[in-house]
Length: 431
Ligand SMILES: [Zn+2]
Image (cartoon, rainbow, N blue to C red; front, side, top):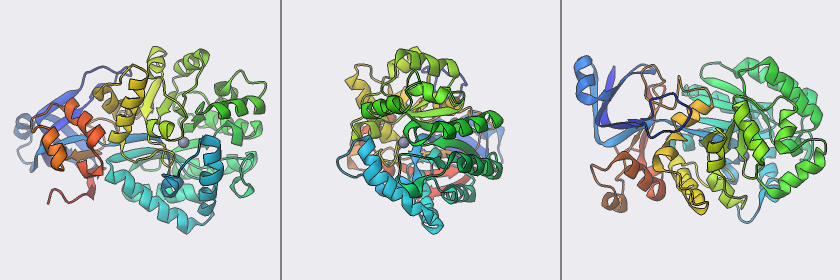
């Protein structure tokens, strides 16, 4: 057993509404045994209870739960940071050409490796990830995640229209391949499958119906897609699905709006759509760096709260501009400032840890440092350069540390990332 001594912060409770009820231990202890957390609390108390544990002294650093990124695209790791597009031309000019390269499974494996390295380097230990239409691209990601026993949620993208022919499957093929991938990967180790229609415009009704059938057959698989990101996109959906009452209704008609359905963006939702998302216990992935980068709009966190809709923060790499979840909260804060309803640092931290885990029904395993949870955690060095040493005091409160890092920080603040009780990334600052 290993006992880590550091400052510790996490949200231990399993209530789906955000409260300021965070547990903070300035001189804390985190005890792990193998792949799981055994105990957390004040260092002295834990040390007394487990006198035989080997102590790892990290005083001055913070231990936090591994971060959860609730929406991103691993193939776009290589197309991040391209100039000058909004959603539909971005897909056409950057996303689709990039994704075509994933017909080559060696390429998929190579990018999956880089992608997971980037997650770990930024303290992210769970992602809800889109691969490409190619079944092998999904295998490549799950294979890489399995090597380090990482809790990965992913799926093959399904598209049977309005995209280049090499990126199209069909309704029948999508259903067959997704069923095979569910069989192979869902609940295999810490992997979980997500049915992944890219978005309504690239799927026919037949394909959405086929995926809806799978969603009913396998009721604990995830569903991930995009929703109401951009006004041109919404107009296009209206013309493609004239009978639907709105964008969300396109998915709803095919049983794709439910618990464990995670919709990227949701910027331009109607009051009825907000209410429906809340009633269905579905989630929105709020992707502020992407929304700003593509000029999509300002997410309305107040509407989400008013309608009891789960929200989880996400990068949306590669339209998102960073893998770093702290910086992602920094942009969420700026978006919320423009709406005159600032998201507090504690709520921001909740939306990438326990709040995200609760949204995904995974708070028994990730998102917190409770006894019994997986030993997925990060070691944060807040004072990593001249400016952070000046700005962040040694004994600063957690919300101040987290906020300063969300504005000033980057991957240099992540000293180590532990997954399933093993150190999988070390930036050498501890040596
Ligand atoms: Zn996306």
